[in-house]
Length: 426
Image 1 (cartoon, rainbow, N blue to C red):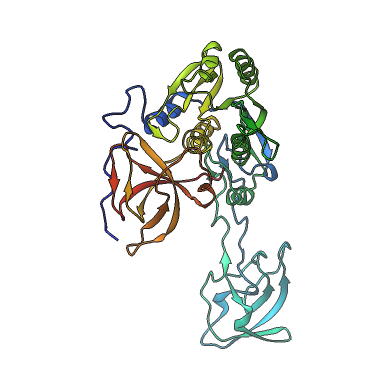
Image 2: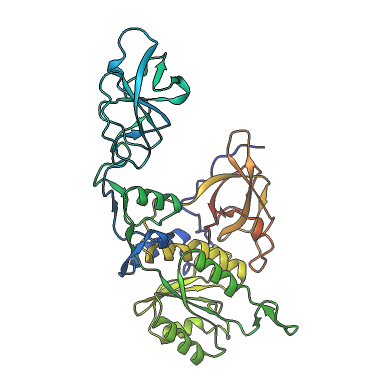
């Protein structure tokens, strides 16, 4: 496999000489979302059992030290190492038994020991826990042949978290391991952003519900199930969903009603310039303010965004693959900003192509790709189809993400380094 340098086009390389001036680049569109969209203002307190996937509105601080007291890291015997004079073996009197969750008033000054179990508090005077496998015992007398170091097998109070220490920053989307840290910090309730309210409007007179009877010129609707599942996985509440009316007046009414109850209205289809494309005219009639209209991207060039009053709008293309690609790139970015999620750095990374590529330049192409292992240099390798088709979905189940092919690149050899953005789990 030939080793190539990374493609050096700035950003996503959306711009080429023949790209229409009305189109902006992917990175410009993302910058506009980051700059002109603000998080929803409402917050709410939720218990940890309801906090998974929620975004923190305030930092989480530890309510106490963790551990809260010195405790045993394993089953064994608590001893005072200072009592072990001379050379071993040493014999100590076992004077107590300390279980987890039980307080002890035993003092281990002198040649005394206590049977102790994992998580139990360390008795006064003890400074080490000898694991049970290293001890022989005869009645109430234990024998030790190897001198333990002070502090052996003891978890010190505050060694994990200090009282008042920051545990999680605001803007964090809570995952199972974050929930664990909150619990360890004593935070049974956390302050989060409320779940986003999203309305979904799918246009296309030719669409029928999957599995329903259809005429020869009709197709099953992919975008409604696709985006419903994507929004649910992203933790949004779908407050309304409908198929678009077949008239401008009907779409104005539907979009207006949805904007009145949602933080975000998502439409699919109807955003090109054909006679039957009524979504943008309806958006304009509602007094919509455009954030961007058209991006130099393939597939999904017509993707648009804006605002109707205080409600944001995202217009996705009607072709299912184009809808999914633009949802992954722009829809998820919009949800993160609206949800107050702190995003650090780009999700893209460099990967190596496993075959040569020949394509028509002009727009940045986002092609589904599958992670296929690593090369001899430890770099991730991707495989992919020989072209991108905006209405084909058969490649999606096997794909792991999107590779970015810059607009001004007509061909690439096998082994070229390209940007790759993994699919969000939505």
